[in-house]
Length: 106
Image (cartoon, rainbow, N blue to C red):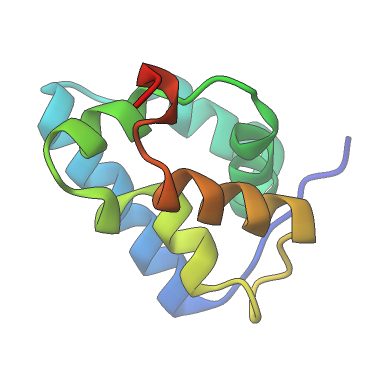
């Protein structure tokens, strides 16, 4: 699989901010997240996270702290027209933001 990256500086900054917020929330370095970004690229990693049927730990942590505006899903929706995310990735991110508690059956 090819590495899929964007060089959009605002996107990269928002992505780094999201990771920093998540790391503060969990109290440690997000090594698996950072490894995925390294392996798949800053676009490819987020697309991979959206293909999982399960909500990611980071989403749940930020949801429970009322910080979904700092989630990868929020970054995807914000940059949907400029970074090159797939339509499915954007739709999944939007669904998760619109239905943050779907995994709880609420």
